[in-house]
Length: 382
Ligand code: F6R
Ligand code: MG
Ligand code: MG
Image 1: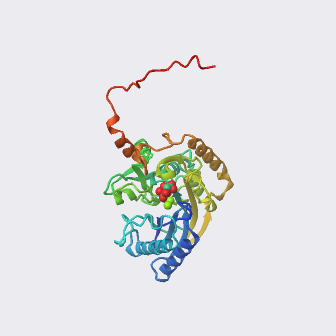
Image 2: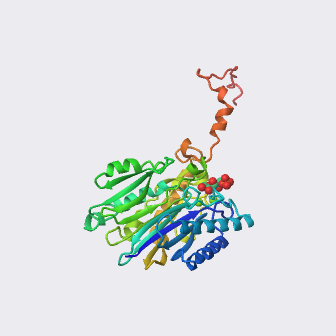
Image 3: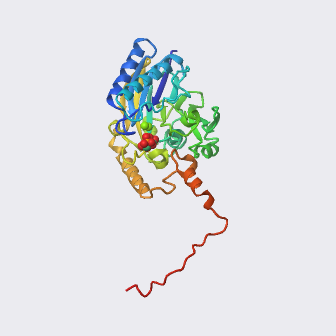
């Protein structure tokens, strides 16, 4: 049986009019570059799109995960795109490119990647979910819903092929050296939720059916660990297989109907609702957001991509979008106050150390009383 690897590699290499959208000429350049990759037989097929300001390279091939040739193709595409973006003075050109030299794999170099290797089933439907202005932990909630919540996924209760549950591989993304734990669901559901609720530290890396069939993969790369300072929220991607012993596509998508709160948004320092949108609305503008996710549905036929379909284009998601916009509007009214503004440690931008330094010597262990002679203004208050 031939195995096919689905590789999605993404990077923000510059965007138009701020951190809004990847310019068309960069998308075109990427398509040309990946077409050459097909001609050179590095990959079988490709699709190029963008999630807001992130360029997304979706590829299929037979070379396995973390393959040097495939990763180099993506890297070279980002380098060429960066060069063009710099030439055109596109905003934040080369933002996620943290090195001049390729070291065999994009991991640790800035771009994010999600990969899975599959033996093609009789029919192979899957979705690729790409988010902007948020972080990998944003997928914890919908992936848990899809693969572990019977109120979301009816198949967990009524389809004998899903009834035994799934195994979650969770990564501690705060560790410099990747560190994983396997948790089985439903047996360890409460332990799993104890980790997944801490979205800034524990993120789902992969999900398997109990018999070892790979079902989902997420990009968990953390730029700030690489760069040694906090420089972004690492807008994530997820690949999710559907049907025939896995959640149906409708169950996969149902998991996005609650616009749950995620970290990111303006300056990577705010909480906001994750809004599912169609490709046309993959443009973060209000307060650089609100954070959003696009979904593309494909099938694979002998290693080739068939599709895509724009999964969130359905009007049935309008109610979710409306709710997301109401939540966004409500949160915005609270300005710089938590929890709209993230807690100190999770903020990408902060002036607090500077402010504290400035008034360090003015903090006192005694309560401060403002002295002066209080005026009696009662007579003049006519
Ligand atoms: C968040 C993001 C934007 C920028 C913001 C400030 O991930 O990309 O919200 O942080 O627009 O951008 P700079 O610092 O480039 O002016
Ligand atoms: Mg950007
Ligand atoms: Mg982005």
